[in-house]
Length: 171
Image 1 (cartoon, one colour):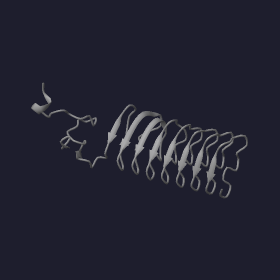
Image 2 (tube, helix red, strand yellow; image 1 turned 45 degrees about the vertical axis):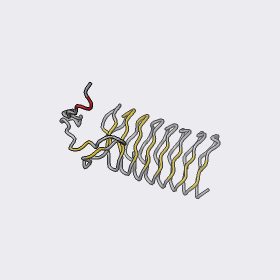
Image 3 (cartoon, helix red, strand yellow; image 1 turned 135 degrees about the vertical axis):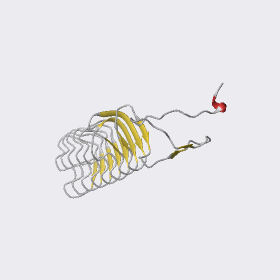
Image 4 (cartoon, one colour; image 1 turned 60 degrees about the horizontal axis):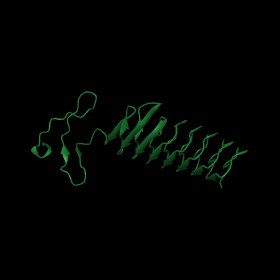
């Protein structure tokens, strides 16, 4: 549904394309749901993707099993598998595998990062096998039922320096 939605689909099936040029270049794709103007527009052989929002997954050429929710979510991600990007422009710049980005403007620093997570508006994760919570402005992190952590001290690489001493935590 929509002007030129699924226009190039030749042998693919079980796809849903809703929006102007949604899934425009899909050819042999299966099991995709693209909803929003230009959502998944340049996807040619990817499958099992859900792109919801204008320009979501717009340049995702060959990615599989991705979920991009939000306008411009995963817009420039040209590949990558099993990624979840939620929020306005989340993951809009780069691609990799097994990446979770939650919050507007969350992203990774370069192509090919794997198994990484960024949570919170504007949070950028810069390495594989890494979880980052909060952008550079965050100074308090709380976990349910536990005292808050304040004034976090990190080294030059952003790694937490453990300087706290609390007899409750000692055996």
